[in-house]
Length: 244
Length: 244
DNA sequence: GAGTGGTCTAGACCACGCG
DNA sequence: GCGTGGTCTAGACCACTCG
Image: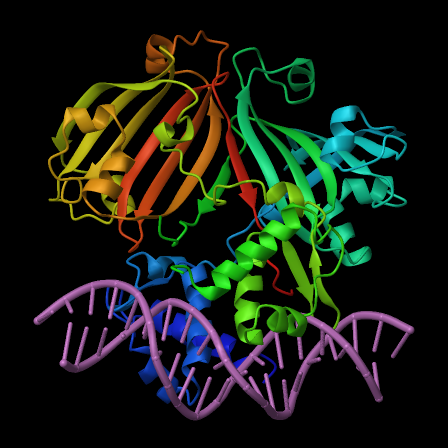
């Protein structure tokens, strides 16, 4: 038993929701009953339920009970967490072949904007990288990344052709935290027309993002432009259960 | 004292982070010390810290300590919660004048796709609504919404010209839960050209979404198309602190 | 008023990171 | 080994909803 008790209880209840033992729109057994069944205290049951609330499977109303959401069964099938990065390689994993061509890789000093976004001094060098991404041999996006050299030491062409995210997490032992993104549509510019083969009526989907490590230090500011017919961004937004 | 103790403690610590009493990248006092200072138990301190972790202001490493993220000070200024709906009226509140023109409002039966997205029987009517949105008098988006009539009873033109979300929360007493969105870029179609005044080279940013109430029942399936130069979508994605 | 979830306590032991 | 956060207990009282 390597997992904490409350996590195991959450997993058990999650399973009962997905297999219909606890049907949608009905109330869960009361916390005291659950505590008795799992031979534990009510606080531990509450920690378990908290996980499922975070996963959006249940919600509780003080004075009334804890209820299973009507979309719970389908949500509980989603194996991955809510969060996805657009680290493109991971998203298409197993489905298609993804390849990257490095169009540019240089070291330079940051612009004022970049040093603000990346929390850098003006004397700290950044990598300036432009990559063209191919899905099954066809170009689908151009990614322009700026990353602090002090974090991404010894960035090689081989790494860039595979996945920077994989390198960060598995080789440097750094963990990705959160990301801030701005998504917009735009007319194709010269590079889009040249590399993504967009004509003037074919727009691009632009994702401008700053990605942070778990400790809150930014490690990437990038702008990615996708062909309009090659992909979309999917987001799941949880409501804030908090009262007004 | 209407707020729970752990929430007050969280607010106090949040304030100390934003005003620099606890500087970024340093460790917080240990949980025991905080428990002594606030004259409470360690579990209560942990509930307070949990809130700040959820807000991405701090992170903790077992055996080591609890640390303030380097981007914490700026994040703590954001007063709103992480979650925003594209309920357009709320987003522009106070900044500009938003107006809606109802292009269409009718009751009909759902298509097979819609009855799946909205979890409806094929005999349950839906409202089919098309609204054109104006910002300071200029059209910026077309919103096509499909909503179950059994939830949105007596939907009037007046409500549609203001905010459906406001009506739901304040008049019907329903709470919005989560939303699922797909964001993409597209060429302008006939309606975009007519109402948003897009020419053939001016793309649209499309947001297709299903919005759920707090109990998990879907109440809106909509497709909104924005002029490419009138707005973008901003998302903040939290990392999953969970181990691999 | 009865029954539910929400909060809180004052301890205990365990797991991990680090020197 | 020491100090940290992580988990857990067995209670207690409060706040809310509902019939």
